[in-house]
Length: 221
Image (cartoon, rainbow, N blue to C red; front, side, top):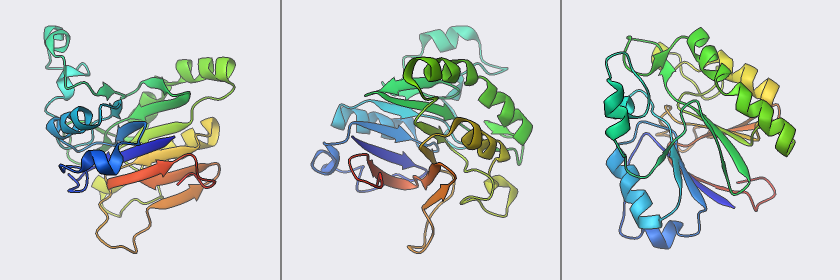
């Protein structure tokens, strides 16, 4: 099984007339946030594969259609049909016997949309637990992959508050042991920057621009 992971930057290799030649063999797509919905629409229309996404802290104008916000009437949520992508924020889904959960947003730094304190993000993770426990009973595992926008604390994060990672994700990985945590938010401009880090039982991967996971390989990459 092959997964195309994307985040934060419209990649010319993906946003291209040659997208089918390059990525037609992927089984599904994961978007880790900060990408316009039109871009997701292009990918779905071109590849005709399931796409699961979360919101980051940019391109959040459509968040009100997927999640109840204080100033959003419920009728708007019911009327909006979206672009065919599957919203994964505080949800757990199963695709090709692969269990995925999602947590969007980043560390609160200016009270903007989709920003959280570490405690608030902990409360977000609690929304996943009933379904994770059910998965453990039925499938013998909680989940295979956690999709986030921000990274875990101390893994790929930066010194400025906007790009701090969440300590809550360290707790989540320790308790629920996903094989992968895919995040965005941290831009990679240097080829020497670290993209993949193993932390206990979880491989943490920065999906900036695009990254392919091939589950057929021994190392999963």
